Amino acid sequence: MLSAINDKGQLIQLPGRHIHELIPPHNQESYFCPQCKAPVLVRAGSKVVPHFAHFPNSSCPSSKSGEGAYHQQGKVRLWEWLQAQGYNPVLEGYLPEIGQRPDLLLQTKSRRIAIEYQCARISEKEIAKRTRQYNEIGIFPFWILGGNRVVRKGSGLLQLTAFERNFIYHYRDYRIHFFDPVTDQMMIGYHLQGSGSNLVFSIIRYFPLAVISLKNVFAEPNLLLNDMPAGWKSFVKKRRTRPLGHTSPQEKSWRQYLYAKSYHPSLLPSITYLPVPSQIQLTEPPWIWQSRYYLDTFLKTPVGGLLPIKPAKMIVPLLHVHVNPNPLQEYLTMLCRLGLAEEVSSGVYRKRQEVKAPLTIEEAIKQDEIIFNSLKSG
Ligand SMILES: [Zn+2]
Image (cartoon, rainbow, N blue to C red):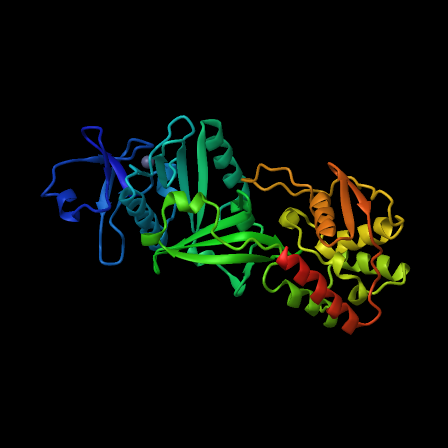
């Protein structure tokens, strides 16, 4: 722990203090755990960030965090970062009403924020519980992941497992936040775009702590808004041209469905491979639900006819996302932008043009080129 209570009841935060001030014989003070009130010791050494430690055999939850140096260093840097901006953050402030000690607790003009700097894997149940508890007492829980958890699979591609997905936020875009104390940089993945697997397209930006403020973290990114993630075209091309090694049961049954209709996945029209913004909240890859809509609904609707709205897709809830997306509507909006449909009144769409499936791979790739590029400029 990096903070404790002294015998005058004051909260003592270790960072920035000279360790010698705190260790006897220079100091006669005793320190106590804010949570269990038991006495704690100051520990310091060449390999550890100075910290307070419980005596062995303590049963206090605070003694069991098992935090490594990386985590503690990051927490301290974030604390310094907030202080430098004029906030008054509390390190590991104890919230007795819920029995939690967020890494950092601060009050901004508009809200109280608990920052959880998460480097280690904890159970999803625990994440959900803490999030609910913070929300219940009116505190905005803001989770920043350790930079040690970043897995990049290319310049605009992140690997996000089920664990990391618990820390996705939604402002106008879906995004996720990391901090690495070694490079002293915050990494924000903006515009997270699902691809039907752990691979998520994103506009990835690095910010040295010295140049980004807390306000900026929550702000709209100053990015060219573009519905086509960089790399999407080549991702689709790869899917069209390379045989799949491993096929999931979901993919297998979809392929059977296609074959029964005499279609081949490589030769589906480009509009069955569109990146809709809320794809990250769907379990079905885009090509599966979009090709079903194309074959079962779009093709069966005559030009000029109204496009039936199928019941909403199964939306996977995300802990920190409070919007209720409508992927099919997002999809139809994209078809409108392509001139293939038009919105005649709110949520009602009319088909404007027929869309033919390509006959060869070359034709398919050419169609992708045209369709994806025209969405880019929109
Ligand atoms: Zn304790």
